[in-house]
Image 1 (tube, rainbow, N blue to C red):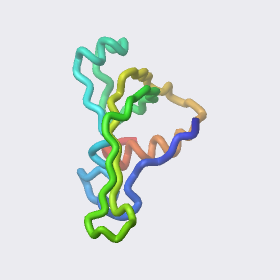
Image 2 (image 1 turned 90 degrees about the vertical axis):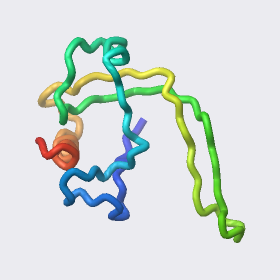
Image 3 (image 1 turned 45 degrees about the vertical axis):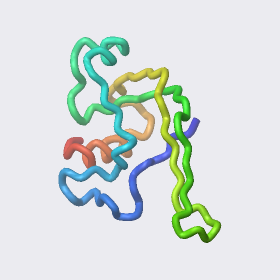
Image 4 (image 1 turned 180 degrees about the vertical axis):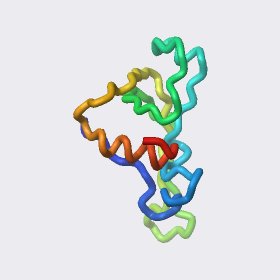
Length: 112
């Protein structure tokens, strides 16, 4: 499975603006102590820690809209309910695309 960069390319949330993430809000997961415990975490990872996720999700909603009724789809979306999740922190010095990951952490949190 290939990873795809999900940042907004249209300038809607430029990376140069401090405090604004280039990633759409709907892509964010919020895990409480209960979910973290299920994943085997006793302590919180620090902000900026790169983690790998693997998930299984069910499509709970799919929608298209054509507000101007011209026959083309102007907007489409799906909602996913994550039903299974695995998460692990990447080890320092892992070979896989660490330059990209470090740049992503810097853009999102101002850290390397």
